[in-house]
Length: 221
Image (tube, rainbow, N blue to C red; front, side):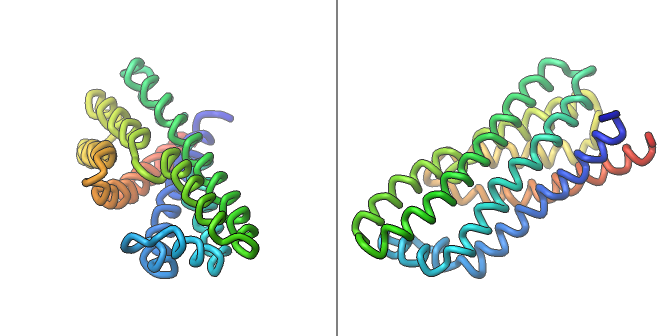
Protein backbone atom coordinates (compact mmCIF):
# COMPACT_ATOMS: atom_id res chain seq x y z
CA UNK A 1 0.00 0.00 0.00
CA UNK A 2 1.50 3.38 -1.02
CA UNK A 3 1.86 6.22 1.46
CA UNK A 4 -1.28 8.30 0.62
CA UNK A 5 -3.44 5.18 0.76
CA UNK A 6 -1.88 4.11 4.05
CA UNK A 7 -2.50 7.56 5.54
CA UNK A 8 -6.08 7.53 4.26
CA UNK A 9 -6.72 4.09 5.74
CA UNK A 10 -5.26 5.27 9.05
CA UNK A 11 -7.46 8.38 8.98
CA UNK A 12 -10.56 6.26 8.49
CA UNK A 13 -9.35 3.91 11.24
CA UNK A 14 -8.98 6.84 13.64
CA UNK A 15 -12.57 7.90 12.99
CA UNK A 16 -13.73 4.31 13.49
CA UNK A 17 -11.84 4.21 16.80
CA UNK A 18 -13.57 7.41 17.93
CA UNK A 19 -16.93 5.96 16.90
CA UNK A 20 -16.36 2.82 18.99
CA UNK A 21 -15.72 5.01 22.05
CA UNK A 22 -18.91 7.00 21.41
CA UNK A 23 -20.92 3.82 20.88
CA UNK A 24 -19.51 2.24 24.04
CA UNK A 25 -20.23 5.28 26.20
CA UNK A 26 -23.76 5.56 24.79
CA UNK A 27 -24.61 1.94 25.63
CA UNK A 28 -22.81 2.24 28.97
CA UNK A 29 -25.10 5.10 29.98
CA UNK A 30 -28.37 3.71 28.57
CA UNK A 31 -29.05 0.07 27.75
CA UNK A 32 -26.36 -1.29 30.08
CA UNK A 33 -26.76 1.16 32.95
CA UNK A 34 -28.09 -1.49 35.36
CA UNK A 35 -24.93 -3.49 34.70
CA UNK A 36 -22.38 -0.69 34.59
CA UNK A 37 -23.60 1.53 37.43
CA UNK A 38 -23.09 0.85 41.11
CA UNK A 39 -21.45 -2.35 42.29
CA UNK A 40 -23.63 -5.32 41.29
CA UNK A 41 -23.09 -8.67 42.96
CA UNK A 42 -21.94 -11.62 40.83
CA UNK A 43 -25.50 -12.95 40.95
CA UNK A 44 -26.95 -9.67 39.70
CA UNK A 45 -24.31 -9.43 36.98
CA UNK A 46 -25.00 -12.96 35.73
CA UNK A 47 -28.78 -12.42 35.76
CA UNK A 48 -28.34 -9.22 33.73
CA UNK A 49 -25.93 -10.96 31.37
CA UNK A 50 -28.40 -13.77 30.69
CA UNK A 51 -31.21 -11.30 29.96
CA UNK A 52 -29.08 -9.03 27.77
CA UNK A 53 -26.70 -11.36 25.95
CA UNK A 54 -27.09 -9.71 22.53
CA UNK A 55 -26.49 -6.17 23.79
CA UNK A 56 -23.41 -7.19 25.78
CA UNK A 57 -22.04 -9.22 22.88
CA UNK A 58 -22.37 -6.28 20.48
CA UNK A 59 -20.92 -3.90 23.08
CA UNK A 60 -17.83 -6.10 23.55
CA UNK A 61 -17.49 -6.65 19.81
CA UNK A 62 -17.45 -2.92 19.07
CA UNK A 63 -15.50 -1.44 22.00
CA UNK A 64 -12.86 -4.15 22.10
CA UNK A 65 -12.54 -6.11 18.85
CA UNK A 66 -13.49 -3.46 16.27
CA UNK A 67 -11.48 -0.86 18.18
CA UNK A 68 -8.42 -3.11 18.41
CA UNK A 69 -8.49 -3.88 14.70
CA UNK A 70 -8.87 -0.19 13.79
CA UNK A 71 -5.98 0.71 16.09
CA UNK A 72 -3.38 -1.27 14.11
CA UNK A 73 -3.26 0.81 10.88
CA UNK A 74 -3.38 4.00 12.94
CA UNK A 75 -0.43 2.94 15.10
CA UNK A 76 1.62 2.03 12.02
CA UNK A 77 0.77 5.25 10.18
CA UNK A 78 1.74 7.41 13.14
CA UNK A 79 5.01 5.50 13.36
CA UNK A 80 5.76 6.37 9.73
CA UNK A 81 4.89 10.00 10.39
CA UNK A 82 7.16 10.29 13.43
CA UNK A 83 9.97 7.82 12.72
CA UNK A 84 12.32 10.05 10.75
CA UNK A 85 12.40 12.87 13.33
CA UNK A 86 11.93 10.83 16.52
CA UNK A 87 13.00 7.23 15.82
CA UNK A 88 13.36 6.02 19.41
CA UNK A 89 10.09 7.53 20.68
CA UNK A 90 8.16 6.36 17.62
CA UNK A 91 9.46 2.81 17.99
CA UNK A 92 8.51 2.71 21.67
CA UNK A 93 5.10 4.18 20.90
CA UNK A 94 4.50 1.59 18.17
CA UNK A 95 5.31 -1.25 20.56
CA UNK A 96 2.82 0.00 23.15
CA UNK A 97 0.20 0.75 20.50
CA UNK A 98 0.33 -2.78 19.09
CA UNK A 99 0.35 -4.26 22.61
CA UNK A 100 -2.78 -2.25 23.37
CA UNK A 101 -4.47 -3.47 20.19
CA UNK A 102 -3.69 -7.09 21.09
CA UNK A 103 -4.90 -6.69 24.66
CA UNK A 104 -8.25 -5.13 23.77
CA UNK A 105 -8.96 -7.70 21.06
CA UNK A 106 -8.15 -10.47 23.55
CA UNK A 107 -10.37 -8.82 26.17
CA UNK A 108 -13.27 -8.75 23.73
CA UNK A 109 -12.81 -12.38 22.75
CA UNK A 110 -12.66 -13.50 26.39
CA UNK A 111 -15.75 -11.46 27.27
CA UNK A 112 -17.86 -12.77 24.43
CA UNK A 113 -16.87 -16.39 25.03
CA UNK A 114 -17.65 -15.84 28.72
CA UNK A 115 -21.15 -14.59 27.92
CA UNK A 116 -22.07 -17.79 26.08
CA UNK A 117 -20.43 -20.06 28.65
CA UNK A 118 -22.07 -18.39 31.63
CA UNK A 119 -25.48 -18.21 29.97
CA UNK A 120 -25.37 -21.96 29.26
CA UNK A 121 -24.37 -22.74 32.85
CA UNK A 122 -27.00 -20.48 34.37
CA UNK A 123 -29.90 -22.75 33.41
CA UNK A 124 -28.47 -25.76 35.23
CA UNK A 125 -26.11 -24.39 37.89
CA UNK A 126 -26.53 -20.67 38.73
CA UNK A 127 -23.95 -20.78 41.54
CA UNK A 128 -21.30 -22.20 39.23
CA UNK A 129 -22.23 -19.62 36.59
CA UNK A 130 -21.49 -16.87 39.11
CA UNK A 131 -18.11 -18.39 39.94
CA UNK A 132 -17.13 -18.76 36.30
CA UNK A 133 -18.25 -15.22 35.52
CA UNK A 134 -16.27 -13.74 38.40
CA UNK A 135 -13.13 -15.52 37.19
CA UNK A 136 -13.54 -14.61 33.52
CA UNK A 137 -14.54 -11.03 34.31
CA UNK A 138 -11.29 -10.63 36.25
CA UNK A 139 -9.34 -11.91 33.24
CA UNK A 140 -11.14 -9.50 30.92
CA UNK A 141 -10.52 -6.57 33.26
CA UNK A 142 -6.86 -7.48 33.51
CA UNK A 143 -6.49 -7.61 29.73
CA UNK A 144 -8.20 -4.38 28.83
CA UNK A 145 -11.21 -3.35 30.82
CA UNK A 146 -9.83 -2.48 34.23
CA UNK A 147 -7.11 0.03 33.42
CA UNK A 148 -5.67 1.95 30.49
CA UNK A 149 -1.92 1.59 31.00
CA UNK A 150 -0.95 0.43 27.50
CA UNK A 151 -3.23 2.94 25.81
CA UNK A 152 -2.12 5.73 28.09
CA UNK A 153 1.56 5.08 27.40
CA UNK A 154 0.95 4.91 23.63
CA UNK A 155 -0.92 8.21 23.46
CA UNK A 156 1.62 9.81 25.78
CA UNK A 157 4.60 8.71 23.65
CA UNK A 158 2.97 9.64 20.34
CA UNK A 159 2.04 13.09 21.68
CA UNK A 160 5.49 13.62 23.18
CA UNK A 161 7.21 12.66 19.94
CA UNK A 162 4.88 14.84 17.87
CA UNK A 163 5.37 17.77 20.25
CA UNK A 164 9.16 17.61 20.04
CA UNK A 165 9.12 17.35 16.24
CA UNK A 166 6.10 19.59 15.43
CA UNK A 167 4.67 16.69 13.41
CA UNK A 168 1.15 17.40 14.70
CA UNK A 169 -0.59 20.55 15.99
CA UNK A 170 0.67 21.64 19.41
CA UNK A 171 -2.81 21.82 20.98
CA UNK A 172 -3.55 18.29 19.79
CA UNK A 173 -0.33 17.08 21.38
CA UNK A 174 -1.17 18.70 24.71
CA UNK A 175 -4.57 17.02 24.58
CA UNK A 176 -2.84 13.69 23.94
CA UNK A 177 -0.45 14.22 26.85
CA UNK A 178 -3.38 14.98 29.19
CA UNK A 179 -5.33 11.94 27.98
CA UNK A 180 -2.26 9.73 28.31
CA UNK A 181 -1.67 10.81 31.90
CA UNK A 182 -5.36 10.19 32.68
CA UNK A 183 -5.00 6.68 31.26
CA UNK A 184 -1.99 5.96 33.46
CA UNK A 185 -3.81 7.20 36.56
CA UNK A 186 -6.45 4.46 36.12
CA UNK A 187 -3.89 2.00 37.50
CA UNK A 188 -4.83 3.39 40.96
CA UNK A 189 -8.08 1.60 41.95
CA UNK A 190 -9.49 4.62 43.79
CA UNK A 191 -9.02 6.76 40.67
CA UNK A 192 -10.49 4.45 38.02
CA UNK A 193 -13.17 7.08 37.36
CA UNK A 194 -10.44 9.14 35.67
CA UNK A 195 -10.85 6.63 32.84
CA UNK A 196 -13.79 8.78 31.69
CA UNK A 197 -11.37 11.66 31.08
CA UNK A 198 -9.16 9.30 29.09
CA UNK A 199 -12.10 8.09 27.00
CA UNK A 200 -13.58 11.50 26.25
CA UNK A 201 -10.16 12.99 25.56
CA UNK A 202 -9.37 10.20 23.12
CA UNK A 203 -12.62 10.70 21.22
CA UNK A 204 -11.52 14.24 20.39
CA UNK A 205 -7.92 13.11 19.79
CA UNK A 206 -8.93 10.32 17.38
CA UNK A 207 -11.28 12.58 15.41
CA UNK A 208 -8.60 15.27 15.13
CA UNK A 209 -5.91 12.79 14.12
CA UNK A 210 -8.27 11.22 11.59
CA UNK A 211 -9.07 14.58 10.00
CA UNK A 212 -5.36 15.43 9.70
CA UNK A 213 -4.47 12.10 8.11
CA UNK A 214 -7.35 12.24 5.65
CA UNK A 215 -6.49 15.81 4.68
CA UNK A 216 -2.82 14.96 4.21
CA UNK A 217 -3.63 11.86 2.16
CA UNK A 218 -5.89 13.92 -0.12
CA UNK A 219 -3.14 16.52 -0.58
CA UNK A 220 -0.53 13.83 -1.32
CA UNK A 221 -2.81 12.15 -3.84
